[in-house]
Length: 390
Image 1 (cartoon, rainbow, N blue to C red):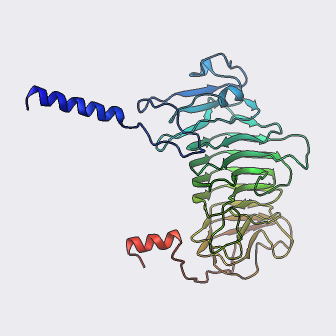
Image 2: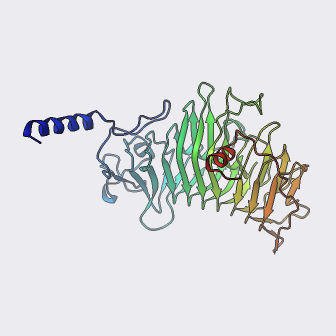
Image 3: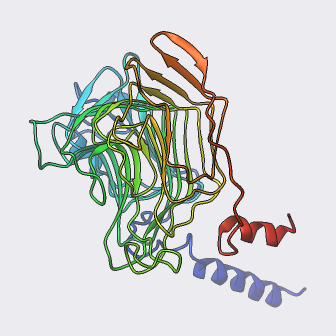
């Protein structure tokens, strides 16, 4: 090739690279990543609420920031981390506005020695608030939110909230302790509780895709321990559901957690009322759920004496292919039903343990799966047709 064609080819390649976007544009309503920069150019920020300074750079332990206000307003970029010093307490709300990106989530965690860093909301809406932000990971934090006694103020330890945002992706809560949240007794669609993922708004179908809550503990919270709260449930099978269309949560995993003394529900992943038990499996009339699994959790002194509820309640309409396994249920109160069911079927219990008044026994539950036809519009059905499985 002569010099002229070679030069023309090089110029064309350079122009193509300059025109190509660095990353996909964020979905409307969600906060996207900041201006592009080269891969692996990430920054770790440090927060020391005992000895830091907000006038410092924040990029090292010796130049740490001091307040949650400073940490919340930082211009984080995909892959960045913000670490809180162990053995300290930060008061207020950590409410970052930036989002990470696929393969480069933002992360909040801990550094140094001692007890996990405490983020204390002090009666705020939440101690950690992710509002229309996505691609976030939270690890190794101690979260509390205690304020004056109230019957009107909604409070949460961790609140991930999407409002008319489309699809929010990739949320991880791992090794976090949430405790002493004394919010008012409100549930959907604007709840109080420990670790909450809530969808709000009515202008645009909105949902979560990819939520993992694991290895964490929730104690002494009002109202819900761990919960999701979707508001887009209308579809042919549920014509009176909330919203104007169907936007289901997908990729949800809740495992290896402990819930103690929740003022209302222990773990809830649907819009249904439980009033005090550990796990509620409730399919609304005409609604479909499929292939849900609840595993490796611990329930301590959760109970509900109101019929037809128990520690674990299987009520409402039939579920589909739901498996509850390898959970531990502990209760001191006599006469507490471990599993209470009004008989709709669709749930299998396996390898669960029950500790009652010091004795540990296998929970021999009798609720078993009743086969139901797989609807062609469910994700599992589409997967099997695509891959030829039967």
